[in-house]
Length: 174
Picture: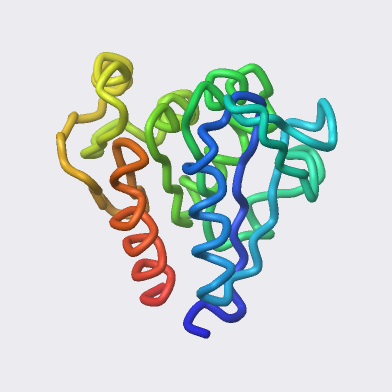
């Protein structure tokens, strides 16, 4: 298993996009990573936009960036809900500032912007967040996956194979 010993936090909140939550979770587990689902702490299970639940292993207040090698942020409207919880934003900021991988897809770029992880970076995501990324100092790129330093971003569910591959490749190199 190529990612044996790697620890990944998958952030979760209500209204996550089902594929963008479950695909990275399963893909990283399959590669051997220890994936922990980290929620806001408001409850123990979070519903996707399609009402499919994902159980949290911990809340953002119970973990720190030092516990992980990477943080993955799925899209849907979950990132907007995540931004309401300072502990979640702080976790992303601390991971980013300590040089750990932060990866976001779709609306996940909202969390990167809130955590200060877009400034000076090339970023992609769901097209409607382009202005938010640019206002937060990022440069918008329309590609399936963009890797800029310790930040990996993707646009939508059709880009998940590229997104998953980029995360695994990054963690294999790290």
